[in-house]
Amino acid sequence: MDYTVEEKEVFMREALKEAEIALEHDEIPIGCVIVKDGEIIGRGHNAREELQRAVMHAEIMAIENANVREESWRLLDCTLFVTIEPCVMCSGAIGLARIPKVVYGAKNQKFGAAGSLYDILTDERLNHRVEVETGILESECAGIMQEFFRNRRKNNFSFKILRNVV
Image: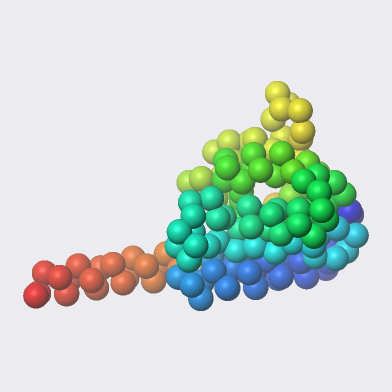
């Protein structure tokens, strides 16, 4: 489960590929992969709009994918790589899946539950704690999100102007 910085970057680039898939579907571009013994066993990307399911965050999709692959709800000896800090729901799911380590790229100051707003993954009151590492390909992970929201604000502004003209 200990990976070199280079290996972590390879896996985070795979998570970024998942974020690009989300972006292609006009979803918030967050991607995730789950790795066991150096092999990706689960992949996911945000798909709430595409599937019209509120819980279809990247981490949830990757966990479900890995559960099927492993034929187990327990994802022991795995590392979850995600482009953006997990939210409360995803942090809970990570703990429930017994994933021992999470590596994320960029912080999520508005919804983060792995150190920013909350610290669910390492909370000593819970029966399962997760090792957390941050900052792998941070600028790339933050950049795809910033570009997405910049474009969304620009498009919303243009729509409001057009609506007022008509």
